Length: 460
Image (tube, rainbow, N blue to C red; front, side, top):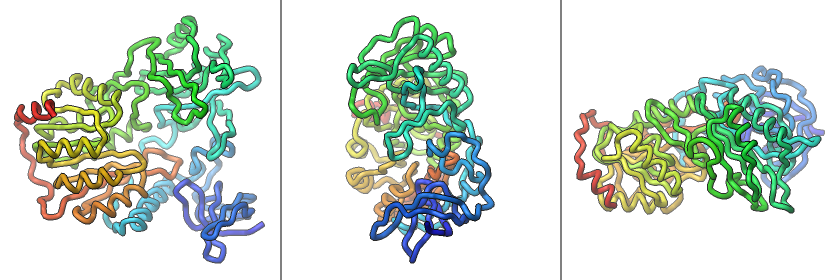
């Protein structure tokens, strides 16, 4: 056994101490704590340890309220004071920005805390197994295939938790079984989303027809719309298999975000913390100056483009997922702005190059996946000579690597962090960049839409 004082938090919520200047990573311990650990892995540049006993607790630690925390591991900071969590999230962002792009911490503003510390998550995607003859939902322990049966989750919205329990009760009342890989039948996962008082359930199953009486009872339990996706793949990492088929209710959930209406299909992405997502989107759009042409890359169902609908004469959204683009164009019609807001299905780099070939783009709004922008997209941005970039990121490391390239032609004006996932080390941020040699923050002007821009966007 080894006694170590831990001094900082890692990107996955583990803490880091040192033995002879070599970092030691250990789960379950916080910065500022001294613990007795067992070294379980040693590499040339680091070691991993297993916590045995905390000798001196940090002032930020309190009793973990979750009974599943030791097995689940999805909320590594749940027993930490929330203000300390916010400090750690901001510090991790600052560290990544300096490490990969030498971006100064002075550009990073104070982090925006989540309105809710618990019960903030609007969606769950949970595998299902049988335990003592009944279906239960749970999670796999991080980095393993060990199933953890969880009969409740403190970060789920309260309605989400209520409906999750009701769904399992209905499935068990009808004696449904967990997925059997040998017969390709049974319930594999449940995907459940709550937005306000509305709810959307997708049952991920094998090749079977869900009985009508099951659908009826699920609807009676308070589910607004019910879908089924068939997934018989050996691995279930993606949850969804076939395109979701609507069994009850509408094909999409109609929701309101910041005053705009959106159709949200079951497989489409939406931020998991609704109230904080509204704050994040509002801030990002506030950084868009009134302009002629705005492009949003990785636009999903078009939420930010639609929030910015009064800021540009022509708005073009680009997304590689066909179903998301279909929904985005429907959402433009739903919000009566289809005359100048258009969405196209394309790879981000290809779509940006096409838009730049027909328009002088004033502002690029982008929210890439955790992997960030690839080399093709970075080259497309460079070639398009766009004055202003507004980059929404969910991964400080890939943001910083992208900034290392972008800073050759752009100046970073500000970085605004948001906590969308309390009790985890994850942090979202908005980075505003201005191309060198262009004017920053032009005075606001009223937009008189020129329909020719919209027609050009529609043709191209």
